Amino acid sequence: MIRVLVADDEPLITAGIRTVLESAADIEVVAQAENGRAAVDEAIRHRADVALIDVTMPVLDGLGALEELRRKVPTLRTVILTSFGTEPNVLRALQNGAAGFVLKNCTPDELIRAVRAAHGGDAYLSPPVTRLVLGMVTPVEARRRREAAGRLAALTPRESEVLHLVAEGMSNAEIGRRLRMTETTIKTYVSRILTKLGCSNRVQAALLVRDAG
Image (cartoon, rainbow, N blue to C red; front, side, top):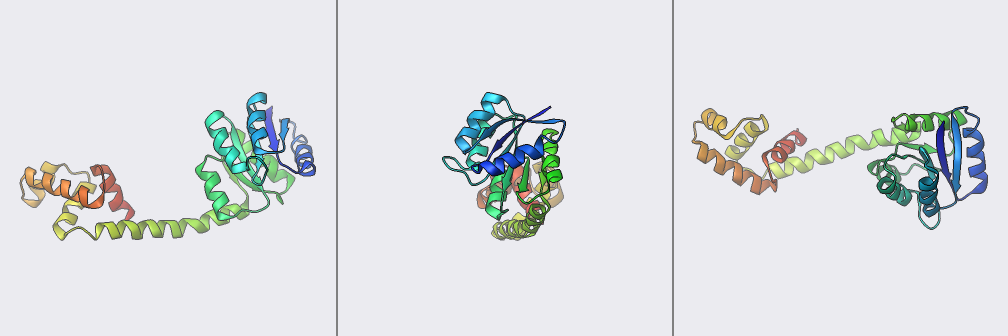
């Protein structure tokens, strides 16, 4: 059985969710909570496998509860349940390890699928949330590329040449042979490049090259 905690400050919503979930033979609702603080306590007390948590709740909201549950019950899989999938909520939930994000207007079958997916170690996003996430990917990648390219623009042509060889995985000795320079000179270049880019090591610098495209 999949042991589920349902947390929502609206008793009617909680009752409806419970009815839907317990219509599935493999799901048991073991606890309910009306606020985020109680959700954390009940999840620990009843050793739930999956928590369905509303975003907007008193005392401690759902996203705050998610962050606390991640620390205190790392094995618990949490699905965020909400009436709206705004970008900040989605980002914060996913960044804090949510196993799913389901809108309250989803179908009963979708709610059950989300719980089963979370319990099985997968993630589930309602289709509108999936579209929102996909819409965020391109702007985020474009911004990251612009920022990386801006940092690389501070390098001289020779420093850029050295950095690209670093990004290819070459050692200082190999770069020296390629550019017909001493290994000591290349080491000086690499040190200067890291300082200019604010990178602590060669790997970070190589990743910056990748991010810049």
